[in-house]
Image 1 (cartoon, rainbow, N blue to C red):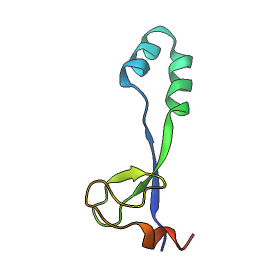
Image 2 (cartoon, rainbow, N blue to C red; image 1 turned 45 degrees about the vertical axis):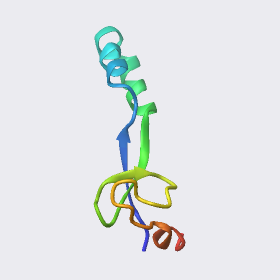
Image 3 (cartoon, rainbow, N blue to C red; image 1 turned 30 degrees about the vertical axis):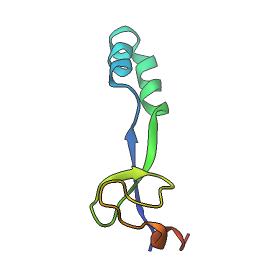
Length: 69
């Protein structure tokens, strides 16, 4: 069994808003360059950084899911 993944924007919201106000194409580039792939914890369904061994929200052990890959 492997972990589900999702992609989320991890950049600064202020930087994105300034980019939208002053240079829309730059804001689009900033948005897509700051998207990060995250794992979804199977126990609490919260997002965690890729490569984590323990969920920071529910302390679930993720090693059992990553050893299959």
